[in-house]
Image 1 (cartoon, one colour):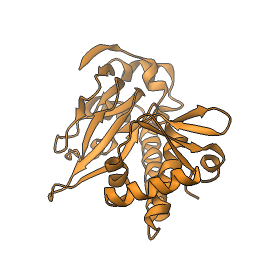
Image 2 (tube, helix red, strand yellow):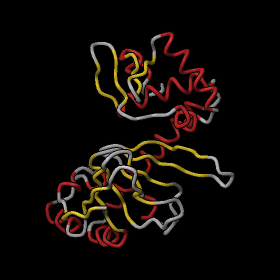
Image 3 (cartoon, rainbow, N blue to C red):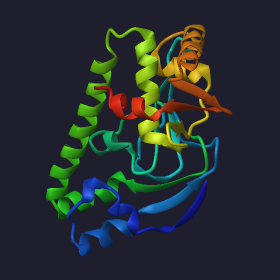
Image 4 (cartoon, rainbow, N blue to C red):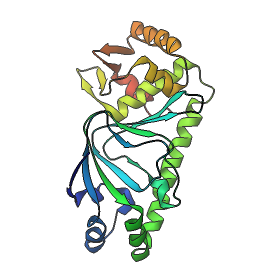
Length: 232
């Protein structure tokens, strides 16, 4: 993992610190480190003690958990502007999953100790942190409620729309390319189904034109992406 110089503008991308004055920015950025994580490398591993708040500046990171039974569960893919590790602000807990760079990824890290100092100096930051965590919890709850009780086909369709919204770019006038190399097994892990079932569903979606294969990636119809990408 290549370490780079402190990067002041990292902090300005975090809604955690929106509204801080210049002195506060300079204070926390003095120990905020920017680093490059090569493709396939770990930002952290399941079971590590969470020690810092991480902001993804560029690239993509897969969150992968291995259960006691050996089953792999993909909890999501982080992209630019996403954060992880907020739970370390309140307790020294273990990381619940691996964080693996899907491509060369640039991250900014903020240690627990430095953030604690910042909160003591600027109490309003604590309120912003609580608000940030509340929004993340609401988003996770909505996703769980959205998928609860749905047929596997609908789970796959809604997953593809959400990925297209978060990691997509236009491809021609009608389609959106999901800029992730996804295997059928990974998609199955995201929706909690078997690979065979997901393979059959993807085949059906390709026949109807909702999903198409583009090399190692997928595209979705753009009207579908905008209509259902949020999972509503």
